[in-house]
Each structure stands twice: as C-alpha cells, then as structure tokens.
Amino acid sequence: MKIETFRTLESVLQTGSFAGAARQANVTPSAVSMQMKQLEQYLGKPLFDRSGLQARPNQLAHEVADTMRRALQDLEALRAGGGLVVEGVVRLGVIESLQPVVLPGLVRYVRERHPRLELRLVRGRSSTLTASVKAGDIDAALVAQPVAGGSARLRWTPMMRRELVLIAPPGATEPNAAALFRQYDWIRYDRNTVSGAMAAQYVHTHVSGIRGTLEFDSAPAIVAMVSAGLGVSILQGPDPTLLQNYPVRLVRLGRSAPVLTLSLVTRKGDDDNRSVAAVRDAMRQTLATYQRQSVAARH
Image (tube, rainbow, N blue to C red; front, side):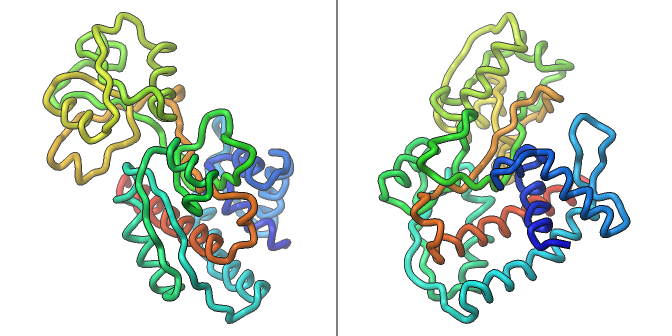
C-alpha cells in the first residue's frame, strides 16, 4: 500500500469529501475514490458509508487515520533531516470565532513538539488576515475560504468544514426556518464576510416574507441579541461557553445548509518553510482532535 494513500485519507477527513481531497492534492475525485477503494481492499473492511449522495467516513476511517498520522509525521521528519530543530517565529492569524477552538491545543502542541518555535498570534477577519498573508505582514492564517476558492497566489490548505446553523430565541416554538423568519427579524452577520455572504444567499434562496433586518459584525453580539428574543440569525455553530450565558435554540438547515471551509492560508513561497510546515501540522492535529471530541460529544 502506497504511503500517499494514507495522506489522501487524511485529506478526505479534513475536507469532508473526495472532491475536497482532490482539490487539495490537485488530482481528480475519481483518483481519490480509487485510492480509497484500494485501501478498503487492503484492510478487508469498508471505510465509508456510500448509501447516500456522498460517501461518509465511518469510525474505522478515523481509527486508520489516527494510527498512521504520527507515523507519517515521523517519516516526514526523517525525510526532512531527522533531528533538525524547528525554530524561529511564525506570525499566525486566527479568525476570532475560532480562537477558543484552536489556540489552547495549538499552543500546547507547539510547546511540546517545537519548544524553540515562537508563535505570534494575530486576530482579525478572514479578509484582513488573508490580505496580511499576501502582503507578508503575517506568515499564515486560519480563515474562511471564499466560495470561489480564494486567491491563486496563495496556498490554501483545508482544515475543517463547518455547517452554518439557524439560531433562534430559546423559547421559540416555530417548527422550521421559514416560520421563524416570519415571526422574528433577521439579524444578519456582516455580508462582507464569507459566512455572512453564504447566509444571505441561503436566506434569499430559501426564505420569503422576511419581517425586517439588522446587521452586525460581531457573532457574540448577534448570539446575545437572539438569546434576548430580538431576532434569528444564521451563523457558524456558536462557542458552547458563549451559549452558557446566552442560550439559543439551534436549528439545522438540512441538505441545503451552507457549509464553510476553514483553511490555513500561506504564501506559496513558504511551501518549504519548516516553521510554517510545523504550524500547519499543529493546526491539522488540533482541529482533528477537536472534531473527534465534537463527534463523541454528540453521541
């Protein structure tokens, strides 16, 4: 079995689909599908549930990826020069909504694996952080990738996909999104952001008869207003700690729900930069752990 097949499995789990893994590896979705079938034949067991429109990884797929992840990292370290110490400074941007999810695990990972690597953290919007990477002001950023794919001058590494959800006042009893929008004002997230634009597209396509609209550029402020009964909104799933103070009702939007791709964006000239590569690996491990814990919590 080729080592690259296990890397492809990791990409499928990160991006959520064969098509996403294909874009990341610059191959066709059929090539990804063939590699996954070869891996299933090697293991003698299925790795995906193919009963729906899109193949979904099962628990064994995650176990295989977990088993191979450290081995692949160790092999990469040997290939890159064995005991060479990763050191220096990496200026890293993380959008504000993901900082509670990412930073604790990321900083811990870097301190344990690369104690001579310093992280200088920056927060901001996806658009401003991406522009800062392009300008060379920071080295990397975890941002929402534009639906069109993002600037071809930069390297986009998908890290996680997050489904947008409808949030409603905790006491709302309306049965679906259409009824909630008829009952409450729409508190929209800034339409100049990627997730705000995706939410607006969903509303304009699937909802009619909107009562009224307000617009804010702070997700926590929107959650607080929805919790107070002042409207409904479509956002990334809010941070659980925020919901302890501002409870809301979460409503899934089904098959047509907008899905946000969160990617680590870097300059193509830094493809061989060991420090940036170390941060990319740390980010990948941190978010993989977060996703596994989220799945376990739901079950």
